[in-house]
Length: 372
Image 1: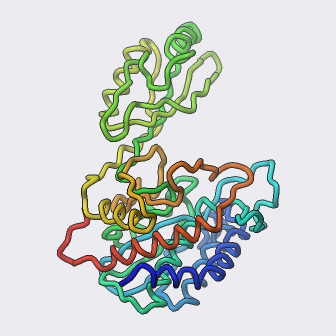
Image 2: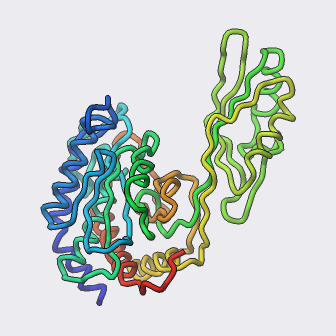
Image 3: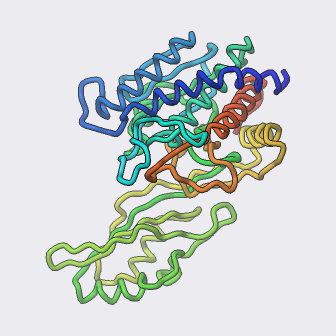
C-alpha cells in the first residue's frame, strides 16, 4: 500500500468531507434538558443522528447506543480499533465574528462552535477510515469511529458505552494534539474551609503571589513524564461565617492521599475535602500503539516528534485503551473553547491524511502483536 494512493483519495473526498463537517457544525449540540432516548438533550441527539446517517450513507455498520454514543464501523470482528471523538460542544459565549452555528467558510477556515472541538477532527478521522473503504483495503482488525455526546460535561456517555459495548483493543481520540500522547495528568479539585480567623492567613500564606507548583504547601511533586504539579482555578468561597478556597490540581504521578495529608498539615483546624479526583493515565511510550502512531505521523509529515504527555483531559482518561492523537500540530495555539472557534481546511485535509495512514497501519497489525 502506497501512502500516495490514500492521499489522492483524501483529496478526492475533500469537498464531501468539508460539506459533512459544515453540516455537523450547523447543529447546535450544546447540552440541554434530557428527554426520552436523548440523555443529553435534543440538540446533541440531532448531531448524533446526523453522524449516524452519514455513516449509514457510506455503507458502514452503524449502531446507536441508547443515545449516549453511536458508531460507524468498517470491517467485522470481535476486537476493533476505536476512534472516539465527540459531537457535543461548550456554551457559545459572546464576541463571535460569524454566527456560532453558521459554519461560515472564510479565509480557508470553517468558523463555528465545534469546528475544531471536535466535529472537524472527528470527521477528518472518519474520512481517513472512509478512504480505506473506498480503495477496497480490508482491515485485519475492524475500525470503528465512535460519536460521543457528553465529553464536555462529564463523559457519562463514554462510561455508559463501556458498560454496554466491548472496549476498543486500541485506538485514539482526535481531541488534543500531535504527536502520539502517551499520558494524561491526573485532575483533582480540593476545598479548604474554616473560620475567617484561620482562613485569611492560610490563603495569604499559601496562595497569594505563590508559584503554581504548590511549593509553599509542600505539594510540588514532579516526575519525568509530566513535570511539576500545577494549581489552577483558585476560587474563594464564603459560606456564612466560614471562608475558604477551592482549587484544581493538575498532577503528575503521585499518591493523592499523601497530597491531601500534606495540605491538612498546613491547614490545621480547617476542613480539607477532596471534591473530585481522576488519576493519572500513563502508558509505556515505547509500546506498539504509541510507536506506530508516532511513525505514521512522521511518515506523513516528513518530520518526527517524540511522543509526549498532556495536561488536557479527553476520552482517553475514561477509555484507557485509546490515546490522544491530534488534531493540533506542534506550535499551534488552542482556540477550542474561545469565541470565533475555527479550523483551517488545509489542516483538516492534512489530519485526514495522517489519520488515514495511521488507521491503515493499525488495521494491518498482526493479531499476535500486543498493542500495549
